[in-house]
Length: 236
Image (spheres, helix red, strand yellow):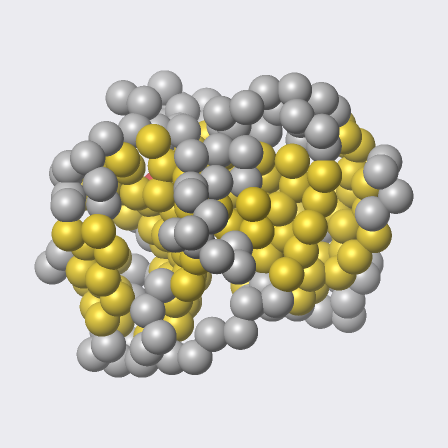
């Protein structure tokens, strides 16, 4: 099953500093057919204006991954963590028993990011935050950036308290990235930039692509493309 979710069909929210698109129900956007996908609960496509951001607010029992596409976002939390995550890099926050955090664009240009929430397999864990650089070259295939899968499989990835993985790749026109989706798993992917083919079906820039029961996933770049893929347990 491959379900292409056009960017224009996504939920939307906009105010004076935030331009957001929601792949799944979030905030005031409610669609019973889009309450998540497997253990993936949220995928927001956000543009944050310079000098603005999300003020201090609480979370608990959720794995929250932020992939910065342009600019940088500065994280501050109730544990005393402070750090800026730049374009192409990733941060992971374990909300666990509870954490209060803020995400601010302290840059002079808009920051664009994906915020991805995955339901944890372990509740009530100690909250935490970590960010990491992930240099990637065109055509290297999918790099695992965050994972709760066995350590010997995903060495170097930021840890998750969820049986899930977040991967990314950069491709030039005609290059392919391959991914094997195990039984009982679901994958959701978005081309942050560029047009792609997924198992022969075209997806435009920032469309969502939901996959299940597709053992082999072939992603072909039709132009310069940056891809983010999430592999989760399929709870359907």
